[in-house]
Figure 1 (cartoon, rainbow, N blue to C red):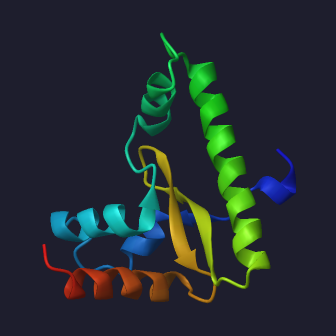
Figure 2 (tube, rainbow, N blue to C red):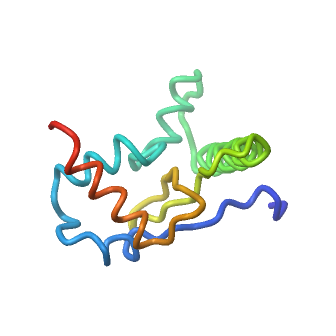
Amino acid sequence: MDKTLKLKEIDSNNLGDYLEDYGNDALNKKLSDNFLVLDYEANIEMILEAGGFTEVIDADVDAGIAVAEATLAEVNKVLKAQGIQWEFKSFDSADYTSYMLVNINDDIKATAQRVLDLVDNCVS
């Protein structure tokens, strides 16, 4: 893959180091609903099926992942060009990969704090 289309990565374990109760369902729902894109294990397969693909095979899923990542990398270029201080990063959540929208000025500790603040400020 072209280096310009490669997304930076964030590891869920590193994020979890700064979240006191990373197993908390409410926290994980807020993380998923407000920070993550394509956050379910079969995300690409479901998109392909919705697009009319039948009998989706691993090669189709691999292609879908490549398209998703290249698209988000292009979105990052536009965000940067517009002076918007956010970007998508690949988010490794142990069993599968999703994508997380993060402030480019935040380190992993600040990102975790942003998640916690959102959980504290949201009504379930």
